[in-house]
Image 1 (cartoon, rainbow, N blue to C red):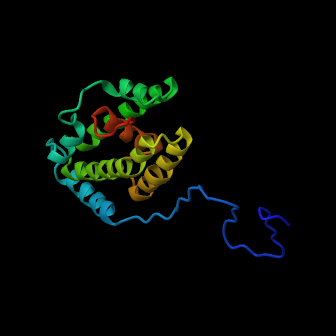
Image 2 (image 1 turned 90 degrees about the vertical axis):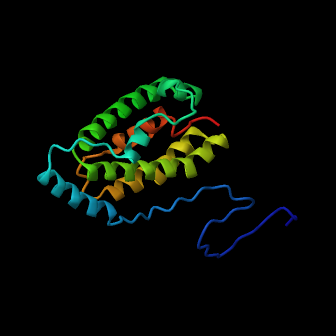
Length: 191
């Protein structure tokens, strides 16, 4: 046997077996639902029963609903074009952003608690994107890897966190939240 050959016989390997550097990505799929949203859902239902005419927007939701100060307003489509997204993704982004925005306005115009729920979810998505996805974009990772990590680190945990899901947010709505934040300059798809 030469110096470059390896022989493995009658071995029990409990993990990966690599001959050189291991560049694989392992993502853990253990998500726990907090009670925070469940408690907010209870408050929301009580608030709707007590005062169905409330129309006040909280500052935190207003922050996400408006453009980040100092950022050039070029629109969602141009941001995604700059991020080299294909036409079909851009059309999907515009559709899901609008779908989510309508649900956001309907759920939030009558309830401070509903606004708190939406702020909580948007904050979770914003943090997840900026801390886990944006670095992949800056490192020129493949689109496949970026979309896989978005699914595993944003969409799946948010779906789990939604619990009762009184607003009936689905995976398209969660992607719509990402594109809603993109359109308002809270998220970037370029370095």
